[in-house]
Each structure stands twice: as structure tokens, then as C-alpha cells.
Length: 455
Image (cartoon, rainbow, N blue to C red; front, side, top):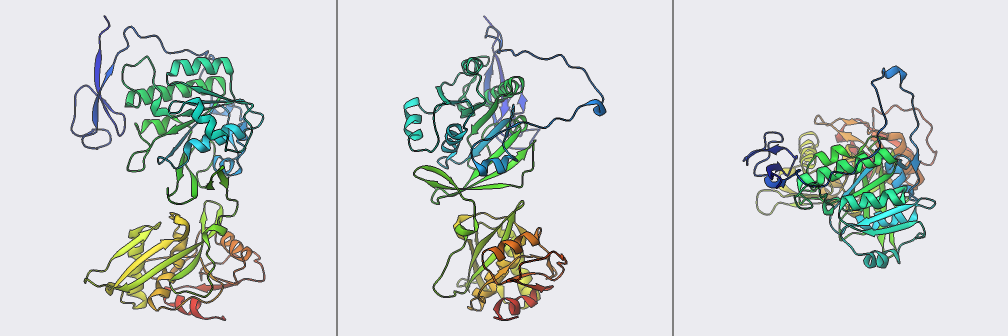
């Protein structure tokens, strides 16, 4: 009888210890160790792959190669991946339950024309997948569906089919018979991810893994899972809102500053080529507390509506509430308003919201946030056709926002007549003649710039 080995693993980082510990020595988290059974005595060996003989070579002798990329059939996904999925890469897609991860994965498998795809489902039956595929766009001739959770069987079928793209839904439901622990455990996730990475690199098959996330918003399982894979994508959005954002967190083959915007419909996820159209609202008459900011996520500019409500604090201590914006940065901006402009924010409740339920971390929206707060404070709407783009410092200076020129072009394209930017913006690039650039160097110059109709 084979000897059974028991070990304790940290569920946060995957650290292994021979006994239970209250605090993980690797990541410092408390009460994260769980006992698992690890036995390698009489189990079947892990599937092997042919390996090429290699030797150490000087870096100067290594030939540069251009990665071959697979067209996923989605312009937004290709944008986030940097032009498509690299052959032999391992991509991890995470998101909240019901956000649309399986729908996106199946839509990619159906829409990748000319590619042989294998959709492996560990959570749904083939009949359930067929029901969803019936309402999604794209053909289904090259997409094979396989319901299995045993990793060795999945790899055996993949070697027989030889797909160009393989989807695993989800990595937490897959297990290997090499280990005795249950699916979803730290050791199973780590072992399965490492084995799939080895298969992808050996055969050149691109693999898309779907991962669950915890209540904190991080991908479930050990942190080593994110280190193993080549690309980590986060699918974000509010379950009560129809819009979704695909964001790159890690990408070994490209940049991580791109985003993809989708709209959830009955027929699947539809690409949103112009996010500004869904983030701007048209009103019959001007309203106070509303400002439009020119944001930029990576190299993609878009305009977003900032809504603010300022009222008297009823219980002495003012309330601060923010949806989609960092509450600490909002408190900083309110303190700057009080110190540099003289507004008595210590007596006011402030509520901030972004249209569309978006979460924005762009510091270039500081000027738009402050403009919305000033508008609500004085109960006076902004002048017609005004847009803002700038970052505010603690001393009240207005600094240029990254990619200010691209923001100006986006505002001009959508018909705005004036954009307020930093006075230190010195780019001499030509801008469209139908938009005026108003420069402010200090925050106390902002009210005149946003309330005056003609400047």
C-alpha cells in the first residue's frame, strides 16, 4: 500500500507546510491553511510530452521570432490581447459569477472561423451548451464540445483532435488522478495549470482557462496560478448593468493598458466600438452637478459623464460616497477645494457617480470630478459644450493628463466646443478648428472656465 502524504497549503499563495500554521510565512495572511492529501505512490504517471533537447546559448545568438497570433473573431478581444491570441499561450479569464465568462468563451470558440476549437466543460452538459450556442452568433462546424473533468482524459482527447484553440470551463472543476485532493484545491489547481501549460508549449495549442473569483474580487486558488499563465484577463461589470469591460492584468506578449467594451444582449456579447456613446446622457435642459470628462484607458480615449450631489450635512459629520471612483482620491480633491478655493466642504455631504456603472482609475478625470462638485455646490449647470481633462495636485495646480491630445480629438469628434485642460499643456499638434482649448493652471481658475459661455 502506498504511503499517504498529508500537507497543509495556503489558499492565498499556495505555500506548502508540513503542519498547520496560523499565519502564512510567505504572504502573511492569517487562517488560510487547509489540509490536503497528497499521494504519489501507486497513481498513474502524468502524461508525458516529447521534449526537444536544448542547451544554454548566449543571448546574442538567440534569433528573434514574431509570435503567430490567432484571430479570435472579436475585435475587442484581439485589442486587449495585443492583436490576437499567441499560439501555444495559456490565457486565464476571471470574473464574477454570471458576468458572462462562459458566454464569451463559447462565443470565441464559435466565432473563430478557420480554427479547430475544443470546448471542454466541467460545469455544464453538452445539451446546456447547445442551448446557449443556439442564440450566439457564429458557426459551429469547427467547434467540438467535450464534457469532462479528468485532466488526463482531456489531454488524451486533445492529442487526438489537435485543436488550434482549447477552452477549459473552468480550471477549478478539473482534477488530475496523480493527486488525491479534491478538485479546486490548491494542489489540484497548481498541478493542472502546470500540466496544461506544458501541453500548450509543446503542441502549440492556445488554451483559454476560465477561473472563478473570490468575494474579494481576486481569482480563486493559489496566486501561483496567475504566475503560471501567460495572460490574465479580468471581466468586469455590474450584474444589473448590460455593459462589460474586458481588462488585461498581465500579458507576456503585449501591453496591459487596453480594454474591450461589450454589451450583454439576448444574442450574446456585442462589441461596443464607441464607448463614449453609452457613457454620455442627453438632457432636455442643462442640469447642475453634471460634468463631462475626457478619460483614457491605455491608448483608448472616451468621454464619460460625472455626476455629483452636494448637500448640507444633517448629522454633523459629512458623508462621502463614491461609485466607480476612488473614495480616498475624492476626499483629497475635496480637501484641495476647501483649502485653495475656500469652499466649505466640511459642512457638505458629497455623493459621486459615473454614468454606465463604470469604474475609472484615471487621474486625468480630476478636473471633471471637481467641476461636477463645484456645479452642484453652487447649483449651477456648466456652460454648453464644455469638457474637462486634467490632473489636480495637492497645492491646487492643474497638471496635464496623460494623452491629452487624444482626449482633445475625442471631444472634438463628439461635437464638444470647448475643452478645459492644464495650462502647462504645451503640445503644438494641430487640433480641429471647431473646438477651443481653455487652459487653467490653478484650481481657483476653474469656475470661470466652466461657467462662462464664451471665452
